[in-house]
Amino acid sequence: MDKEITNKIIRALTTFGFQSTQTQNLFLDCCIIKRFDKNEIVFSEGKKNSNELFLIEGILQRYNVTEDGESVTTGFYLGYSVITPNFARTIKNKSLFSLQALTETIIVEIPVVDFNNLRFTNKEFQLFGQRVLEEELSKSVLTETAFRSSNAKERLTLLRKAYPNLENLIPHNIIASYLGITNVSFSRLRSEFGRK
Image 1 (spheres, rainbow, N blue to C red):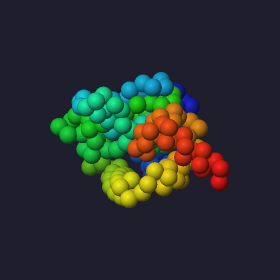
Image 2 (image 1 turned 60 degrees about the vertical axis):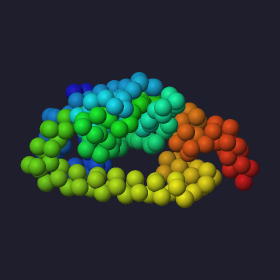
Image 3 (image 1 turned 90 degrees about the horizontal axis):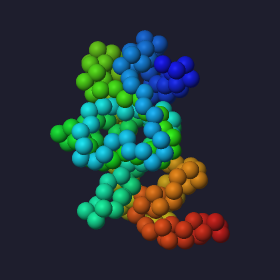
Image 4 (image 1 turned 45 degrees about the vertical axis):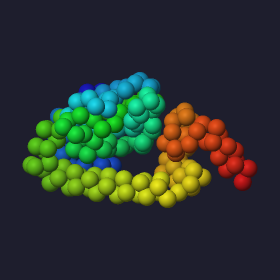
């Protein structure tokens, strides 16, 4: 394994709460490093997926495709992030959404079976799993509440707080999709904010 990548993974693991060298080594022994080019699909909605995923570098979008074939962005992952746990993003091992790299991306995968074995035999993995689950639930409730009770301007403000500088890193049509507005409306909103 490349030393630079190993160091990035260890920094990410520390961020995720894996402090001991032993636990970090267990993780490194089980993981597979994958690189994705900009716009490459990591996995697709409705397809089999049986891995736990950890974003080490880059930006990902979570999205679904409507019956009309339109892509609707439902979330983002940036920097060191844990992708929604497998049990929460799949039904019968098939993905509930698609995941796409919006920049060059490095992801670490661990098969669910291996990760579960680590959770059952290692306290740090067990605590990590519990914390991620709590954070994911909290984030989901917050996002749903914010989006159901806010107008587009308030949603953009929330997006900017949650993901500073995102507008300068990814296409605006993807952000507009996430906010549930048209590209034209998004452009108007940005202009309105710029005048203040």
